[in-house]
Amino acid sequence: MTKLTENHIEKIYLFVQQHFVEWYDVQVELVDHLANGIEQQWLINNSVPFEEALRIEFKKFGVFGFQDLVEQKIKALNIIYRKEIWSCFKGCFVFPKAILIFFSVWFLCTLLNSIPEKMYVLIPLFVLLNVAYFYQIINLKRLIRHRKVKTGKQWLFDTSIIEMGGLGIIFNNMVHIHLFVSEDNWSSTINLLAAIAIVLFVLLFYVSTKTVPEKFKANFIKQYPEYNLAL
Amino acid sequence: MKNSSLYKGSLTTIILKLLSEHDKMYGYEITQKVKMLTKGAFKITEGALYPALHKLEAEGFLDVEVIKVGNRLRKYYKLTKQGVKETNNKITELEQYIATMRALVNPKFT
Image: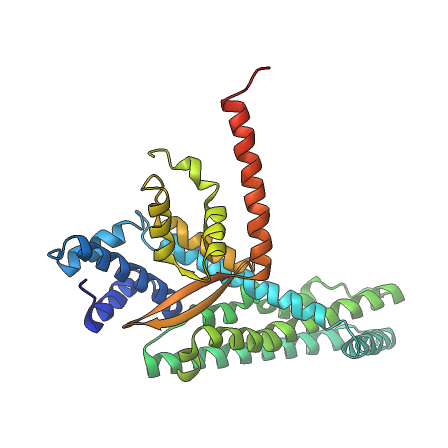
């Protein structure tokens, strides 16, 4: 049986890349599939040229090529990410972490009760969160660029971390929250509800930007050990 | 079989069932196995297989392992504990569906 050489494999990687699959973690599976198909063709007819065999295999993916596959992969990664966020978020409501959450709610509620101008509390808090969010994004993008320069590879996994499983848009717009908050006098109940909402939001932010990426990365390195080496 | 749309609704069940019979499998192997078992009557298209695999992975039914085989990397899928349960549920559902269809297509009048 005629096997593909290293050079052929390189050519398939290039082919996949030219067909709009720029992420290495998606390319790996496609390259292996196309390579298997070509080797299977050669088993039947050894004289089919490599390029022709590759074209035949690619046609099997249909008129949209790899597009559906990539879209589904992005969707799948976002689902995995959001599930992880939910699992970590729920995990915060157990002893002793839960004590810190209740204390934060009590502290914030007391603060809101004692300050008539709520914006003095809310705006600095959301600006701080926004700065933390953009710092995280810039840092991640720098890391991705560095990785690409060093290895020539991009990972879809990194993109899903930046997008936080599709939740990034919420954090991206949080600085505008004050536009929706009324300046009227707040009752104690509203202060308590606001304190709960803010603490839960900060917790969600922390889990999405800190806890989950670390856990997600550890699982991903188990699948692709070379991801870790590419730092 | 020309009308493969009849099989489409059962694609995830077919994948899960095959994986339950093997320790782990890769995408191309699944397509070939189905082709062989059905004697070419049903061919899983590449455009349907991978989205289905990625969906099952996202749902927590499959675990992934990437191994270097020869001069390239290969991505293997295997069932998780949750995946084993889901396979049993899906097969039961499919068997009930087949029984219902059989009763409709070939009713026995008593």
